[in-house]
Length: 366
Image 1 (cartoon, rainbow, N blue to C red):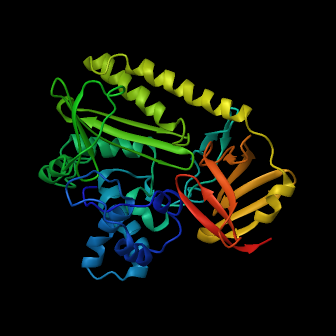
Image 2: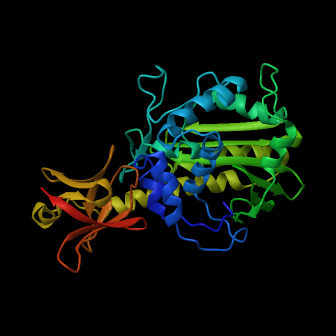
Image 3: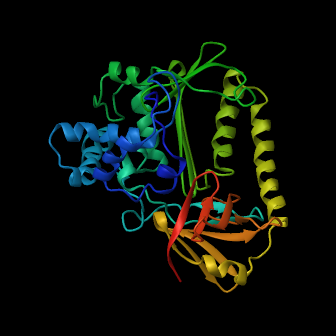
């Protein structure tokens, strides 16, 4: 995350399931260089995924076999030895396990709605593990035991683990939600915070369609924490782990006092913001949107079912409503609350702008 290489927000945020592993590797050459190395924190899932494939490339694994081989190696070298019996690399748990959770997202009324499982594909090294709470607890215990698994097996050296925890680039923190953090930096797959009393916290979070996760541990206190919930990262998912984490920090160690209450208030405010947006949102006009229906670059589709308008991308379906200014908004789905604009390009070709992510032109109409 200190390479200086940037990543367009839609690349691994919306198109994780699109590229093959060779395409992902090649895409690295087209990413923008936005800062000198080791000068700026730039979160980059493409760079991270390439790093995950490098050991396999070094042993001669061909590009078209990387994704499957990565899954095999994770099972044999990480999940099995660590005691993560149920963990695997996959996008969809159905047919693989019988006990699994469905992801959810609030709509513009604040009510939770189920989401389709999101694709990870060749981006698996950046977060393609399906795992249970017990699996992740075993991983935390491996960290706290210096590389020894729950069954006493040495999986990795304590020195290698400790090197992964060492920060390389500063990470910004919120003075409101992290008032007692005096330093924060990104290491190798871990963020390391240091609190005002010297206590270190090593952690990472994650999110995909309908799910938000957190894993962290305090090595000096032999204490770890895993929070998994079936709620979309935006706009409410992180508040669940932030509340649990800061409840632990404040009650056990006297750190970040008052933050749980702030997190709860922020969660309620996020839901109210959705409801307020919903009160301003109306059903779309079939006549106004008819010229824009069809297939678009990047795999997007704009479709209609009666008075209901949908923006679709792979398994993702995002219903759209219209705002008083004529712009559109996702009323549900992965990007709930996100503005969407339907406008003609300079040559008259219909285009969709998913504000904050990307703009695509229509390729084939309906």
